Amino acid sequence: MAAQFGRRLRAGAATTAAAALAVAALSASQAPGVTVDDSGRRTAGDAQSTPDADPPAESATGNSPYYTDLPPLNTPSPTPTIGSPAARGAAEAGIPATVLDAYKQAAASLRESKPGCNLPWELLAAIGKVESGQAQGGRVDAVGNTLTPILGPQLNGNGFANISDTDGGVYDGDSSYDRAVGPMQFIPSTWSWAGRDGNGDGEKDPNNIYDAALAAGHYLCRYGWDLSTESDLSSAILSYNNSQDYLNLVLSWLEYYRKGTHEVPDGTGTLPRDRSDTGNGGASTSPSPKPPRTPGTPNPSPKPPANEGGGSGSPSPKPPSGSPSDPGTPSAPSTPTDTVDHLEDAGTADLTAMAGDTFTQKISTRAETEDGEAVGKVRIRFTITGDSDATFTGGESVATVLTNASGVAVAPALKAGEKTGDFTVRATVVGRTVSAVSYTATVTERVASALTRTSGTALTCPAGGEFAEQVEVKATYRGEAADKVAATATLIKSVLDPSENDKGPYFKDANGKTVRTLTGLKTDENGLLKLPKLYADDTTGTFLLRIDTAGGATLTVMLTVEKAAATSSPSPSASPSA
Image 1 (cartoon, rainbow, N blue to C red):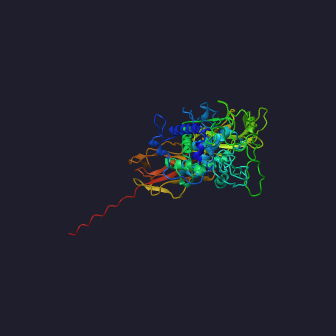
Image 2 (image 1 turned 90 degrees about the vertical axis):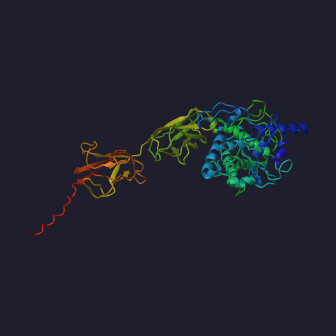
Image 3 (image 1 turned 120 degrees about the vertical axis):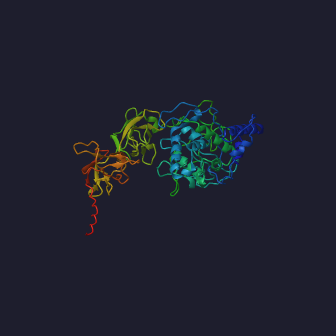
């Protein structure tokens, strides 16, 4: 049935046929693995875009209509570093900040929960573009809720699938038939099992881009699909909306976004024009009257009233060329993000930690208006930059936090890696371009505060022999085992002269040569360090072995070389008597 929608681009049989052929040819020409001849006809190469197995019968959207706009033929600019000011580039390559953040967070979550799926965030962006025009150009608030409901037409069998109401109208406001809901266009029956809480507010709301993006990721990653393979990728996309035209279109946007994209402020994304059932407009933003919520039903996020005008399923007026929004659509209501003038440090203490440790201090940033008033419910993105392997708790280099009523966002705890030195954490506002606040964090080398021998046995050896016991020490820091601490061991001349001795006990290198200084040593995970075997030359007496660690912990071990025991010769035989 969805393929049927793709053919209804214009009224009139001749126009419909011509438009459908044009879309199919251009979709095919831009889809990976699909080739066309000079006349735009699909060739045998398009067989590669067909999955090896038939797609599942279910569909995330109920095979609802979708936007058919194709990506530009020009290559977009590469994606800038996350958290940098919005880049300039092709308008179609711009993705609203909160929407882009939701896609990347969802993909990062799937990398942990289903690493074998290999879900690229660009696939979520491609589907979000085709399903809702990136949440209608990013018309979402700071927590990701759409400013007005995004609803598909009634699935009443009149040119569409016939799906009777399954949610009592809780999600779609329609108690007669189901409609696709939200920026990723889930039908209620699918959302009931596929829904996810992507923004951590305890709700699973299809009208929230964070929830919907995470749900779409899990939906695409079911059945053990590996989306890095062509057949599984095609199967997953077709399971979302079972149409070859839809598959080609999503693959085209996926390829486009993979070549580069950039972040634009929320509400400024390019709106799509053409839809598979009408040829213009988009999913309706005018729901049926919202039914009262009854106990035990899901709690859809509160939304402002839908725009007055067209009924559910009616296309929006087609905007003029170059217009960012429909001229008849009221301006989006102001959000807290719109009022942020600048960011301020909220009393962050010095950020210093030893390699491998968690920073005891957290970064705090405050969002303020021009008059210095606090702004709550604003998303602050914290990004680690510089040559560092430090991460936030959870292993990510980017974290997004909502400001509280005092306008303060507290970043997750930082965990130092093994690279020492300074790095920077930048705080920016998601969905608005204001100057970033930068924080410098320092990672110091691992240190020990104390060294002790693990054995009390005296270390003695005969001249020219070898010590029976190897020296082992334990390093601690504030009473805890100090792991991976650098150390040096040197056979010194005396306590007053710590230079290397040129006689007495020694170590051997890999070639068996005499060595009296060992460098590059490190304690193990338990803080233990066992030195190689020691040997003695012919010099007898008392000698000192000094072990130094990073942080200043030092231990001096006494070694004794004794005179070798004399070997007695056998007595000569007595001469026989004369």
